Length: 408
Image 1 (cartoon, rainbow, N blue to C red):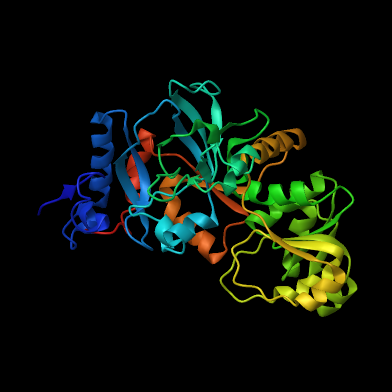
Image 2: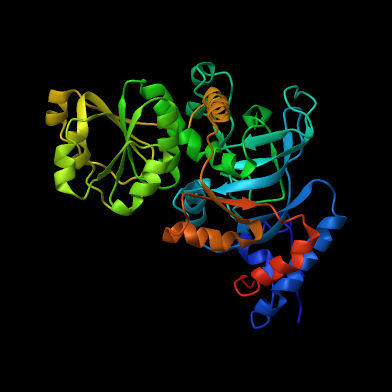
């Protein structure tokens, strides 16, 4: 039986990359997975410093598998990071299953809540140096010249680049390189690497609207108490807002109060909803769902001139503009944030000792973590610790993938 193991770059002029990466007799594939992974690590030891290993979906919706590929060439503005921790975000799963369309390029290496150590920088980089602990979020580049970049809203730049989209390889890997070092951020010493990782996307997503669209006297509602919602409660409390946690389930009450909410509202209980009418100045919607949700039922919770802001990936909403006009309520959205927002958030978290509530597992168990994310079993945020480069882990990783590795 012939076994062929190929690396990225050797096959893209043939049929789909996922069909060419691994050629293994299907009847023997599962038994040979361990040998293939060990061979991959053995090959990596003999490769140059521009090659690394990540975990990739070889085609839409497939499980992630070990994947060797060449890193982008270093440029004067580049930074290379040795990954230590990487958060698992819902957007990673959207990329894997193809919800983001052309943003996913197979083989797809996700991961955009990265904490690691700088290993090398380009000749023009003066703000970072080897050995520093840094973080990388969703955005990896911008033009730096347009009006939005000049305003500090780099996330609105028409030339925005994303860490793990459009062929860029993200943080589900041993190492990664960014061509624009300005989107690599120093992590304050006071913050735990595992707990800060989810802040780099999910945290920034809720921080920006809470910081920019609310004031200290505001009564803020946080709708949805998952990965985004629990961080939003912590931020709103530390910002001095009066926080109401809003959920469909009373089972979330204890968690919500422990994170800083002063009130808890079950929105499936109409009596509670009626009693809370016109009580909030701002509602942050952190729900991410493909299901139809009647968001109109939350508008009566707003006081006049109140705002409801959507940051989760939701289906289209319906709004009664006539009614909203009488109360002058606003519907807004928010998209992560710019560089200044990231820096402000990290400094704020260091001062107030804020981190995400996380479950940590090895990167080699990434498919188990993704399953937990999809089924809702992840408690708040899941963070993966890099065990790729640990020699003692290689055989355990081979065993972990022995039953689910796709045969090619």
